[in-house]
Length: 114
Length: 113
View (cartoon, rainbow over the protein chains, first blue to last red):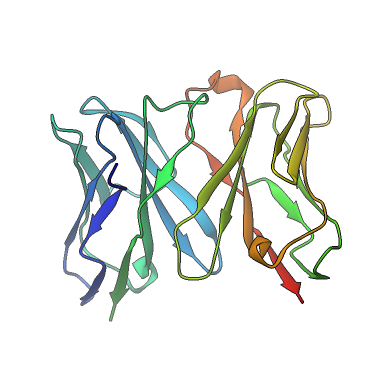
């Protein structure tokens, strides 16, 4: 089975711009979660989508949004980028989401905001 | 609220044992453990669901004390391949398992030959 893929792998943007990141989960997985990873804060949960519906949301401003398509692929969007948004953005898929299933992480998208 | 992991970092010789602790201020529904090697994605190790539950994965095991809201990860006879950053992720009991994971800041483990 192919693993979780994320595109692009690296991205450089300017403050004020917006960005869209893409995640393709493992085939058959219906849950996709997004995380922001920084050296200072570690792994922080952004949101989880299951069957095209946002099921959980972390404590991030409304500039961070996401969606999931019928084929379970997911995108996250960050509008009005700030310097502090520079981070590694990881997505993870699981079979159904929730407590009982492990998550499989993608390689991440490294976003640099200048 | 983020669970607190201790120690922040540990350096061991190959063959030595290590314990990594994860403590939460909230009542927990589950604890998840992941390992991340430098430049790679986190990899799932195990989930602990019930109070007092223990699980094993090769020479890596973990316990979950529901009453104390704590989990510990035990690495016995450590191997070079165990090097990496270990994260615990917790789900609050109030969510009944329906909330997202909150990860600790990680414990950096370095195994030297």
